[in-house]
Length: 613
Image 1: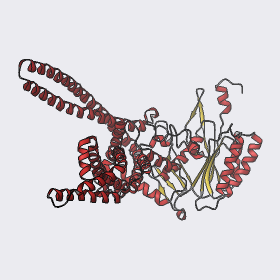
Image 2: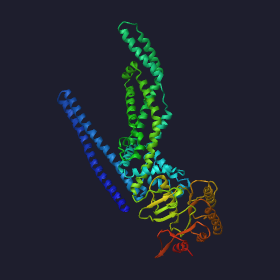
Image 3: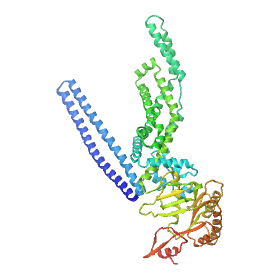
Image 4: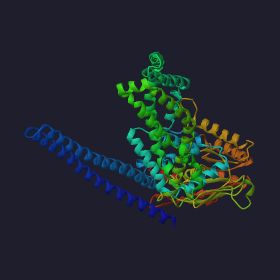
């Protein structure tokens, strides 16, 4: 049923893409017609003007020119609307195509996250492929801003989440999941804003700008100059009525001298207003649909977006005010009008004062706007992931005090979300109690490492607030520790084995901590950097020490000797993956089974590749 639902959504997206492509082709044809029409209007206008000036009175020639210019301007206006429509539809097409790429795991067509990351340095991120190219973050992140992308990544890399935060995020993701049009509208507005300025929009740029352009409040100066302006007018009127001598010349001189001394503030405020208006226009483009959206029956979303809906504090409201300031200060470009206005009243200084007020009022509001926007973008990424994978389940979080009827960690139909649907194999698995440790044995390439990553990635997804790749999933709050992809360091002079030992020592340290949450640990091929004899001695001792700690975990190994420890250490259980050989080829079913692995395939692989055995 869930597979059918996903196919329907995939089909609906394909139909949307086809429909948008048809609209783009029609708009491009219309644009071409408008281009020819504009060219013909220009040519006919030139010919008509020439004939009119040659054969008729001059005023008629100017009338013809005015008529053709008007017609040309009208056609150009409608042509511009068509071009804007093409841009809008192309952005919409890209959004829908990106959804299809995410469903198919077509990595080359999935946009890279806005936050650029190299190879992850965090061991868990590296082991579980959480960040970087073709990672969990790459797959899920749909944020249009650096801040939103960073927020989502922090959820994947975080280790100490309060359960209340996770519950709140999951509730919001559930509420946002069916709102695909809402999410796409936000992405569309952000995409159009980015194309307009040809750069990725960063909300922090406004905050940095406000820090480097602090408000210069000429409050007392404005009161003084305002009083002087009133005095100028009063003394001028009284002088014209012959009631007082020309005192207005003295007050005007004093007014002008003080104004010119502080004129640099007005000059810089014009550039400030233009910069602020430009940056805020991008923000409003992103938040436009949030201000206008009706949040009926969406209480969690309404609460999150509340700062955008308070009329007096809406970003668009501040944009309108700043645009009025820009328009008022823009009169500076007309020297004569600017001089007359400022001789009568401190025009430029008044609007500088207004701009400074907006800066002071906006700064705390902007911090909240950006925080809510980044939170929403990260939540939208998870909600979009849930929408594109309707077969995935939302995890159930279990209290540690209620483990009698629940498992510590695990679920049904567990699969790896970074594998395509057609290649993904699922398994049922759970840790029944604290202290449950599993040894997974099996041949090379049988699926041991992938299964470790499957558990780890789904745990990360669960506590990020999103759905997991399973049909059902339960977990208590755990800490997570992995030792899967250890690497040596030439620069630091650390060998592979020593790096592995350091990592495993860190695991024991973490396991022995007096912490309210147990540890979930995942280890791949323990002590594989040394010889067989020492590996077996070290592995036995290490597993005995692990069994004393408060945690659950899996250790993958191809050393069949280790499986014997399950008979000697309480809480240790064996599982395995197996393979078959058909027609000279290795065949794996990737099905997790109880008990130790009955086969190995190293010699078979060597023999198949023509090596002596």
